[in-house]
Structures are given as structure tokens and as C-alpha cells.
Length: 222
Image 1: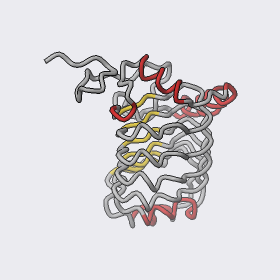
Image 2 (image 1 turned 120 degrees about the horizontal axis):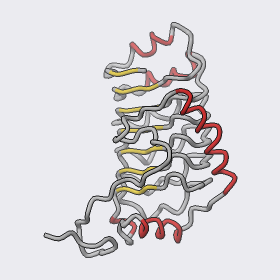
Image 3 (image 1 turned 45 degrees about the vertical axis):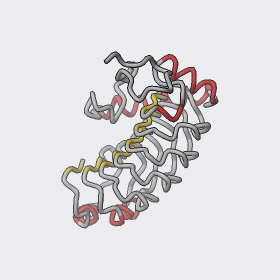
Image 4 (image 1 turned 90 degrees about the horizontal axis):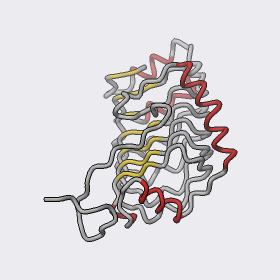
């Protein structure tokens, strides 16, 4: 059966649309394995998001619809289960209320400073926020089905507000500002995490190992 064209609200099927190509392989991209060298990650995290933030692109409903059209996604927002919003220069998360069917949201390499306005994304499984300007983990309570969060290459100083995510399995938080045992102590309240990336933070205290040993399902840690 021929797949219905993008934008047809009467069809439940469509052709699979691959993620748009970008100049830098996004962290957490299933095709890249999430790999980034320290030099590459640092260079992009300090330069590209700041440049994009200065563009101050507003995430309007019209721009979101235009992106759906360009990427051959559905024009009816709630029919989309994936949305590619990376490398757009957005400085604020907003106007996603109609995208209630999203399971995967790509937001890496923008100028986002805050996690917010995701109350309607209750079906979300994967959230990619790497390479932004985020300083705090917050406002994730509505995402009760989230199992993968990539917030690498930001400005996070403390791991917090994740215990509400009962099925979170993968947390990538490399290239941030974590330093002390206290900064990661909240991980003890996140027993579902099995894959954890803390690399390229300034975590040198040997007692950090004791925190990781309390995580019952942890099988992969960097």
C-alpha cells in the first residue's frame, strides 16, 4: 500500500522521514552512537549555541508548521511522533501544545536557556537537549514515559528533579559543570537509570563511586 503524503490527517501511516543532515553529528543521535570527542563537544558547546542564541528565533506555531512541511511530516501537529527542531536558533521552548503525540523531540544545538512548556508531551520517550545554554534540570514532571534524556554540553551544575521520571533509563549529561559528590547525589533517587554518561565534567572525588554503587540497574557508566 502506498504511504499517504505528509499532511494527510485521514491516514495513520506515512513514509519514515530520516533526521535532517547537520554539519555536526548531534549527541544522542542513534546513527552516531552519541559519540563526540572532548575537543569537538567543547568547541560546539561554547560557540554554536551562543551564536544561535543571538539569532533569537521565536518558536511560533507558523515556524513549527513550516518545519513540518519542509521535513515532509504531518501538517496536523498531533499526528507527528517525531519533531526535528535542532540547529534553528530557538531561544525558548513554546507553542508545542498541539504536538501531543510526540515520542521523540530533537532540540539540540539551539540557544535554549530553560526546560519549559512541555506539559502536552506526555507521550515523549526521548528528549535531546544537548548543545544548548541550559543551567538547570526542571519542569520534566509531565514526561512520565521519558526513558532517554540527553542534556550534554550545557551548563548544569547539579543533577536534580529527575526522580519524578520513573522509567528513565538513559541519562547523558557529559560536558557540564558537575564537580562534587553533592552535585550528583540526586542519582541515588533515580534507580531506573541503567546508562549514565558523566564524562568531561570536573568530577574528581573518589567517593563519587559510592553514589554510583547505590544505583541498582546501572550497567553502563562513563
